[in-house]
Image 1 (cartoon, rainbow, N blue to C red):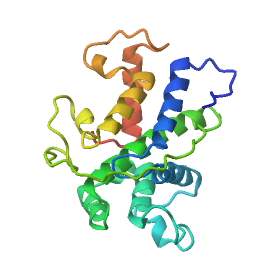
Image 2 (image 1 turned 45 degrees about the vertical axis):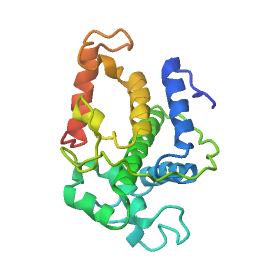
Image 3 (image 1 turned 30 degrees about the vertical axis):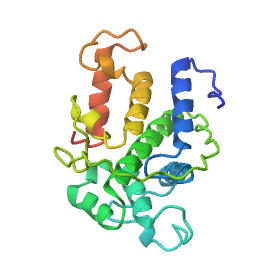
Image 4 (image 1 turned 120 degrees about the vertical axis):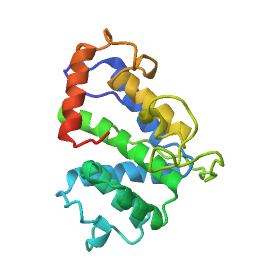
Length: 227
């Protein structure tokens, strides 16, 4: 995977983490194939580059916006655009409507994970006017689509595993591969998960941990994050 081409002093671990995440997008997941996972990323990019739809508008309802032979179901495409463009408007009722249109609850978890990763990686490149990460060739294998019997809906809208830790780590626990991707990306863009609650004086970044948290809080506020 090619590195970012820029004169800016981008840390090597950021470059490597984004390349690794892109490779994971092309890997067959638990519920979506490599082809479908890359299609999810491509839809994130389409949503980012298109004229913004209102939260109540779905791309599948607009003539010609979603092709009839799209590799993803309409419900998945609608979810990708809404999560990408209007994450602050998501509700339990909206989530139930996506699941009710045939997206398995655990497939939704995997979709959310890939959408979040694609937004994090692409917005980094867009903010610095860099080329977005190149997408690799997809895995040819099919997903197992096996639901874990011990998963339950407790403190989240989605099924989660019985693990200890903050809710942000529990949210994707129904699909462990995506929790691994979250950890990989967080370690480069934020802090190592193991240091989440203990390391307040990290030397990893040019910004102090306190400065990072101020920016994170402000960004969450602007994005209307209710977490």
